[in-house]
Length: 283
Image 1: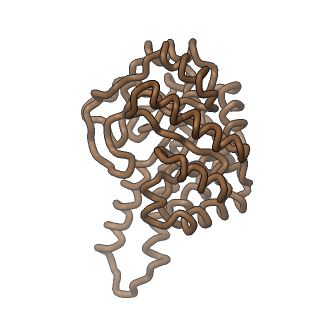
Image 2: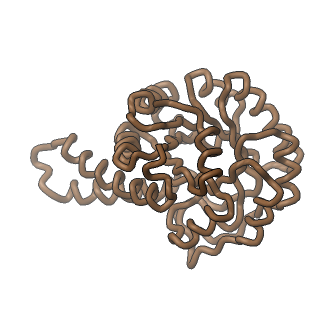
């Protein structure tokens, strides 16, 4: 069932667990996300980034994702991830997206506030939930690399001012998390995260959850993180399964068989994340 993610995040915040927002680029990844959510009886957020929409075609990919979200037996939200364009946000909410993210994290604080206010006005006109980001992460959303952790971390005082000025529904923060895999041992600034939580009452989001150890995930949830975005580990599972299938017996050129093993591999990763985030059986 398609629903807005704001109520889902608020419920997670109240009950002390987090939702997984899993990025998709095509039919197979979408199937893996939905199957994992149904198997775990968990609410889920299916996310499409700007790069994915450009690759697959906005209307085509939206049709696949929204169709699966409406048909699933669990509660699902369809989310636009890391958009920098008001026009793109407007197009997605018109298509039926139940959540969007405006990303002005590379701008100055004032410019980020201005852009986010415009995005909030656009989303609210359609009753759509909206997330914004303050503080910049290293790495690229659509690439699975290994990155150092030097980035512009979120200032707690600015986070309080930002949320008050923009009235967003959720805030993505930078506390040492990265897009892709972290080079070396991941280290999140939990002191900073705790202070942000003390100053901000909206649900907090961590992008770049791929590769974070369970103990870090659990501590972040305890400090108020209600949503984790996962992309890289899903794509790695997809590629590894495809590679294995392609070097095996491919004489029949059986595409459903080839992609089925990839869907199963991705589903296992997503189910593990759902269990780790504590959202299993919370649908």
